[in-house]
Length: 98
Image 1: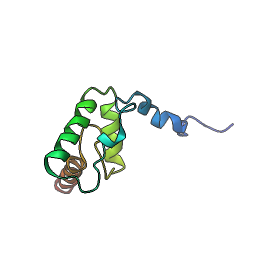
Image 2: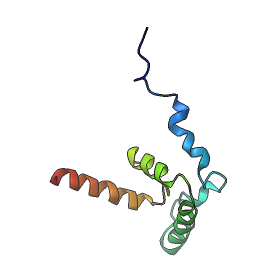
Image 3: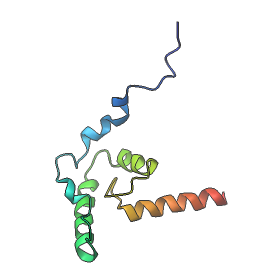
Image 4: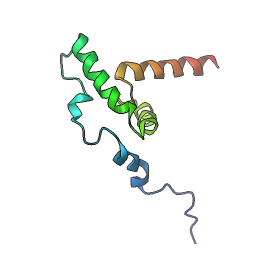
């Protein structure tokens, strides 16, 4: 009989955490900036999205996933695309040093 304990679980198991996201019933436009949005308007929108993230029971899973796939747009796991890029850049520097 085949050994199945090492096989990956069902795909649903990998994504089920998303059902618990605080953003699930929110307007997705809050989490993704429209083309050309700059300055204070962009900051206010991102801060409103981050406030929702701050209440989220799956914020850690969301951030982990967004960093793993290098999500290029939007607020994920409480971080903007620029903040995630900075985290990834720091990880890259740390891995080259250490």
